[in-house]
Image (cartoon, rainbow, N blue to C red):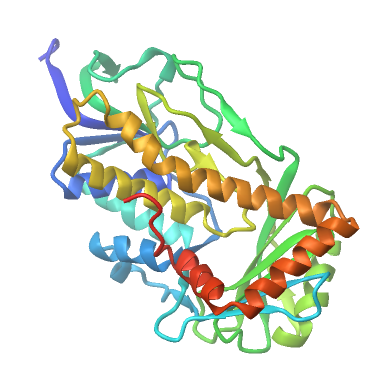
Length: 373
């Protein structure tokens, strides 16, 4: 028993939301999976997720969506405003919601419970990526393991044997995230307002009376919590009525980045790429990583030498487009001059006048556009 080698198909490092969903999706496909995390899985993330229609479908397929106790709050309408154009852009999908808002912690709790039941999870376990590679002996808690594939889902700050580094954009941004109650019904409307200080998004939060919302404000400037609350009140006291903020407001660094191909590891979610929250699609892109991986294992054996390169090529186009788009939008709004204002004004007019573009935006928001199948 001492020299026994435990052989698995996948080792997943990082049991956050994307890592946990990846592990459970692969387990459902009858792969032998081990997921490890250096922490104890006392998940303290009190934020919400904007889950688009595509991500919802995956959670439904995995049997998770209907287990949520807090009823997901649908997004039936998206309103986009800025400080340049007088009229907002309105996006409405009559057939079905463009997305739903759920609590991060609730989804994670369901996933961890399932992984523990499958005996696929080891917490308080840390590995140095510089010392591990696929198909070679790896020692975990005094046991010997071999894995065909290694998936990494631990954020942007990693050190590997290949010395891979990220392509990084806009280092100095950070976001403020919190909740507020309001006296008016939010009517299942999501808002994105481009202020001079940075973009402010407000989403309907799960609640019985539809009088609770969540916000995320992104900026490269310092702002006090009081000034932040005044900024939100100024923009939403008419639509939402009197506001009362929760005491807890979280501050997170934003480092949009993109990892390149790695022959040893499959990066997924924020480890592969993170984008500025102006797009509101970072987590949903991670779900598409999972879907791409699941489709790939139906087409190629895990031992294939081109497996990793195909995965990265299939995810590259969408990652680059989102990084490019969010970086450009932030540059245009943060660098205020006549040329940039004209570009943004033309962009608003174009979306307003061409229904085809509005329909494409709705499909993108729903995750229904597949750039590479």
